[in-house]
Image 1: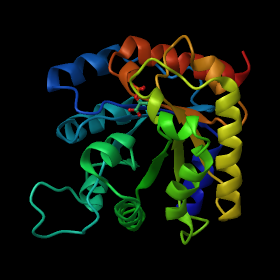
Image 2: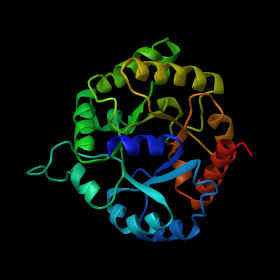
Image 3: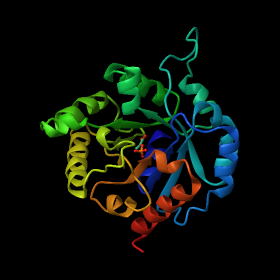
Image 4: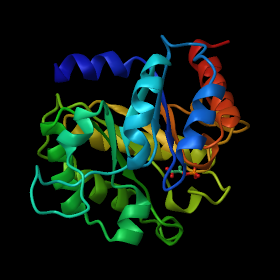
Length: 257
Ligand code: PEP
């Protein structure tokens, strides 16, 4: 089952919206009402990661629109005395397909280490979720030539993972998240090539998304970069209008129209 999920999703690019800590019920209903049809469902998959509070209410309306549901994090224990935490099986139970792991906001603000990300990956796989593993360098690290070393270290959590495990990786340069700055096509192409080569060295062949200030007007230029197979979108996913435009731009690239 894991394997069929992997290859079924691989042929399509993924546009995934990460709402972060935003959105009340009213916002969810407005968003769903305004969310247009995916113009190229054979080429582009759409997913949304609202906050925990909106996962259950949004699950069925999103399913009806063929939008996959994902969570923004998970706790690695299965159950028990872990006040405030949500397990991978709980996410699966309410219809999540994806879970974002290793987002830089969790690494930098909450202090999530690679070891914790590793434990969360295992928990996600055991529950049948597909992790979207976020990796990315800080500006200082890029400026001092440490980008590849940082990415290799963050990817090392996959070293012992099964090659069949369903997985998506998102390259998100930290300096591009929420800043309006995006990596140049050259930086994206070069970095994605490095990420794919590291993944291949570890026996993984999975989709690699780009994330970091993806907007309707830069989507096409980012999606045509070799090795880019979709986008993880933060701010621009909050409004259905801009999210629709990003999906349309990605669909145009994917279908070559
Ligand atoms: C993100 O949070 O993953 C992200 C890429 O945010 P933004 O699009 O707002 O930069």
